[in-house]
Structure formats: C-alpha cells, structure tokens
Image 1 (cartoon, rainbow, N blue to C red):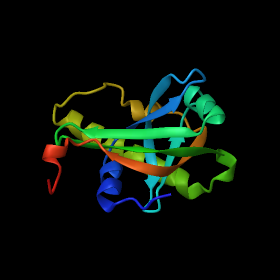
Image 2 (spheres, rainbow, N blue to C red; image 1 turned 90 degrees about the vertical axis):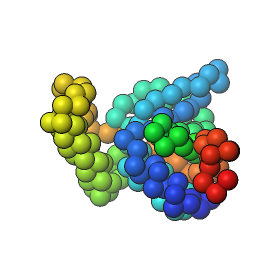
Image 3 (cartoon, helix red, strand yellow; image 1 turned 30 degrees about the vertical axis):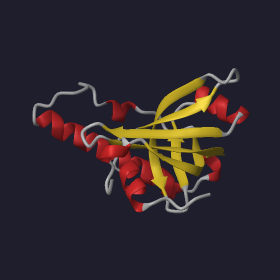
Image 4 (cartoon, rainbow, N blue to C red; image 1 turned 30 degrees about the horizontal axis):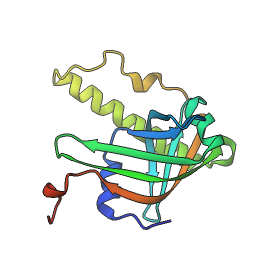
Length: 156
C-alpha cells in the first residue's frame, strides 16, 4: 500500500464518477462507471457497486483493478492501480451508506441547479432512480499513474 498525495485525493473526491476497469476471464478489459464513496491517504479507495454484474464477477476471479478519471477542462487525470476486495453490505456500518447517500444528494442538487440555469442535461434526474448498493469494493492502491502530459504538469 502507498500513501496517496493530497492532490490525488482531492482530484478523485471532486469527480462525479470514475471509470473502474477489471479483467474478464479471457483478460479482456471491462470498464464501468462507479462513484467513489471515500478515499484515504493510506491508499484505500471505497466504492459502492449498485449492481452485481460483470465487475463483481471479474473481481471474484481476479482482484486486479484500476480506477481512472480525467478533467478535460484542466487537462489532467490519474489512474490508480491495485487490488480489490469485495465487502458484502451486511459487513458494513451505516456511516458509509450515509456518505454515499450524501454524495447522491449532492449530485442531484448540482443537476437541479444546472437545469435551473438552463444547462439542460438528463430530464429525469437519474440519481434519484439509482438502486441501493449491492456491495462495496475496497481497493488497495499499489501505483498512481499521472495521466497529465509531461510537458504541462505542475512544476514541469
């Protein structure tokens, strides 16, 4: 496990969603959108998965995982690589579920504000239609890859 720099933690906390990549049995990459519930300095990333689908099946067979996010406007991004553990909901305390509900509420609020400003997006507020999480993915980060081109990185 590695210690995550504060700029990486802040970057991921500011993302509405991330791309989670796992490996199929034939080693074909599988990508899915997920929301980070919590990320800590000790290199742990906590994500709820709302569906027990391909990501779940893949992690049961192979714990390798990567999480990527980019900010197109700032032209920067990161990929976290590591291994994941599946935690059933019954092993989790109510605090993490409350954190997730807070993030969903925040996303809904931002969508409503954008719609009021006439920045129309999805008409049905899809966050309000999301099911209750099925399980939690806890990732132990082994490596951080800076996706920002070398020549425009801070301090370069």
